[in-house]
Length: 444
View 1: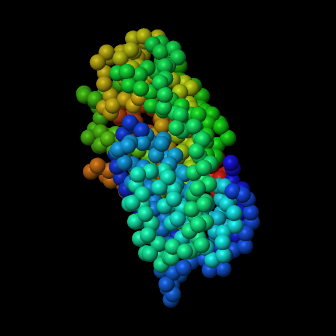
View 2: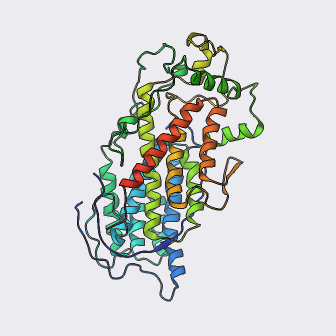
View 3: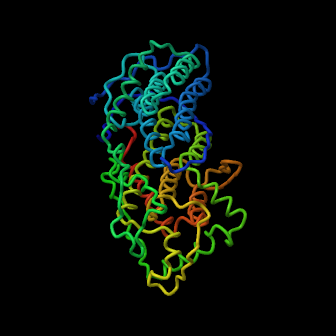
C-alpha cells in the first residue's frame, strides 16, 4: 500500500537525540480527512513552548533508543538488512501515529480520523510500545513498564484518546508487512555456475545469508530491481585488475600495507549501518528546531531509505553472484587476466561475509542514510560528527566524508573491491532520493 494524503493541522517542535552502539555480526485503514483535534497535548500547565518541545522530544528519544537496543541485540542476532527493516516498521508506526493526528505530513497508510483531543505524544508512545511488543516478542514486561513510565513522564493519562489511535496506526503498519516475504528469505541456496571464475561460492560450507532478501516487498520502491546496477567489471578488464591488486595489497590479513589508522577504520565499519548512523542522525537533529511531525518523518524516511537500499542491494547481489576477493585472489591464475597474479594462501583482514560481493551492502545502506540526512541538513552540518564504537572513535566534518570512509573501509577489510563499494554507494543515493520524493510528503 502506498502513501495517501491526510489533512489536518498542528505542529510540535522537536529535536531528538540517541546514541547507541554495538558491533553487529552477520548471523542475522481506511482513508479519511479529519479536522484538527482541539487539545493536542496533555501536559502540566504554565510551561513555555520550549519546555513543551523538550517534553515532546523525549517521546521519540526514549523509544528510538529502545528500538535500536532491541534491533542490535547479539542474541538473537539480526543481519543488518533485517535491522533496517524492523527499524523502518517501528518508525513508520510512530510517524503515522504522529502525523495522523497533526496532519503536517502524509501518512504511509491511511488511518481513520483521530478522536477528539488526541495527544500526538500519547499516540507516538502508544505506537512505539505496540510496535516493539510485536516486533520483539518476549519483552512484554520490560516494554509495559517503559510504556507506563513514559506516559507518566509526559503527564499523560492511560485514557488519553491518542493512545488507541497510536496503537491502531502501529497495528496497521505491522499488518501491512506481515506477508512481505522477509520470513521466507533464508533457505538453502546453490549458486548457479559455482566453480567458474568470477562466480561466488560459499566458503567453508557456510549457508548463504538471506538469499531471498531481494524478494522482500520494498517499502517505497516500485520493485527491488528498480535501481539494479550494471554488471560488475569483466575479469579481463583493466578496472578489475586495478581493484584486484589494490585489495590484494592492502586488504590482506598479515603483511598488509595498511596503516594503524586504516586498520582501525576497517574494524570500526564492521558495525552495522544502524549502529553507526543512528548516532549521526541523533547529533544532527539536535542542531535543528524541527517540529514533532518533522522529526517523526525524518526518522521514518531515514530507515525507509536504508531498508529499501538493503532490499535492492540483496536483489543485485544474488542476481550477479560475483565472487569475493578472497576467492578471487586465491584463484587469480584462472581469471584470464595476466595483470592479476594469484596468491593461494591469501586471507582478508576481516572475515569474508557469507553472501555475494557485488554490490556492497554497507555502502548501499550508509549512502542511503547519509542522503536522507543531506537532504535535511546539507552535506556539511557545521559541527564534527563523532561516533565511538568498541573503543574506536571516528570523526567526520561532512556526511560525504563518512560515506567515503566506509567505501575505503571495505577495501581495507579485504572483503569488497572498490568498484563494488562505489556502485553500492551510488545505488543507496538513488534509492534515498526516490524515497524522499515519493514517501511521507508534506500535506497539501
